[in-house]
Amino acid sequence: MQTVTLRQLTQHFSQPGRLDAIYLRPGRGQPCLLQDQVHATANLGLQGDRASLRQSSAPNGSKRQVTLLQAEHLPVIAAFTGHLQIDPALLRRNLIVSGINLLATKSLFKDQPLHLLIGNVVLEITGPCEPCSRMEQVLGAGGYNAMRGHGGITARILRGGLLHTGDTVQVVVGTDTDAPRQSTLSLFGND
Image 1: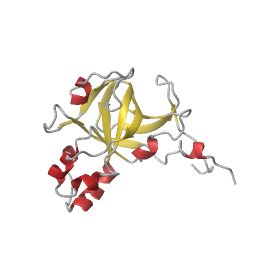
Image 2: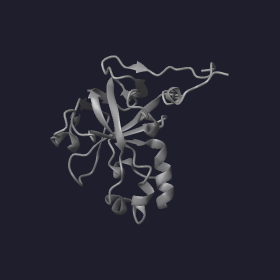
Image 3: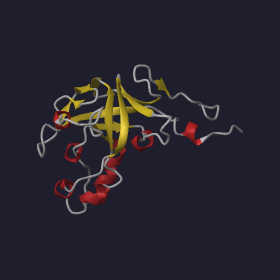
Image 4: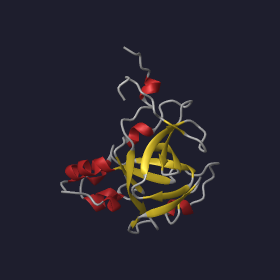
């Protein structure tokens, strides 16, 4: 049997994901706008989203240029809040992604970066996207706690471009954002 390291395991995903929806937040407290496509600007954010309007003193911009939410978490949040379903727009995340575990896309090793490739856009996962107190208003009592652990992730745009609903979401390995290497590691010889 082949010995598999933790480094190898963290690069291996069973399938690519899919960009299910794109939302822009034009201003604080304003309703989210569903889009079919949006331009992602490196080190800034999504064109038309309020996060792209804020200036950051960090050299590569804010760590919260884009927020992503796992589509598979929507039924969980609904169950925790007693709803039949949840409108993703209420949760105020930019990109709704299915088919890939977003939390696993943040590298465990600083010398082995993992990035998300969505269409031609490259994102660096920067951390969890914790819920805000507004979730109590939109989801009802307990909404804040329902979102804890299910609030998604934040990301920085390393390489910009156009995002489209339906784009494939893949994990790529390396630091070269012009030529990222897809993770095609075969761990057990049956992939």
